[in-house]
Image (tube, rainbow, N blue to C red; front, side):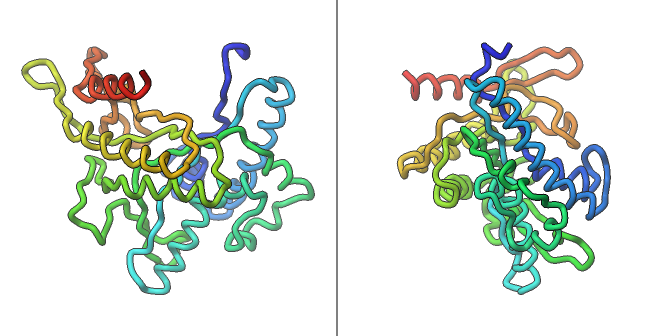
Length: 291
């Protein structure tokens, strides 16, 4: 198979599976322990670097990188406690994985927690150059300090711009935030080759009597986010590709089958596939922008 593969993503969303799996206990393995969570940060970064070395040594033609969540992080208020909580969470979300693999150093706010785990040579392994970066973007994050909680509480609904529309997962739709994330990666990490490896929305539109799915809200979402991406490209962001999430409705982590992200509707009983209106819109969009 290696002769048919040109690119490999080593890890997908380490911020997510580590926080939700080892700190909050929502995802597998279901652990809620701050020390285990902190230990896993360095372990995953080290595993990433060692995997990159091992694959590159044997298959030098394969381009290697990972996909990172890079959502804007804001404080819910001007309260200094909320601002500090947001700063810490932003350091985790942006810098503990993407920033560390690109710069070879953890953010200063995390060094008191991680320095005992770092051995000689670790950061050189971790910071080997990736051939590309993947960006997964869905929303912005708003943080409030809470006594006894490592990162406080996070909301995915904008408390300042309440007029903004939301997806059925209650995430604020804000293509300007997507544009800001793309520009931030350009400005802070040397404008790497960048693939938008996930971007999409949950709208639970159903089949109607004509046997179709008229998901106009999803089309509107993609129109606005692709417009924002093209604006970033015009301003020099080195975007090499874009992947809509997702081709079809699927099992969405702890949400199971309750949220539909697909361009194709799946009847979960019969498994029949029905392309949604957004499927045909996206097909025409891609065709008109490639040809």
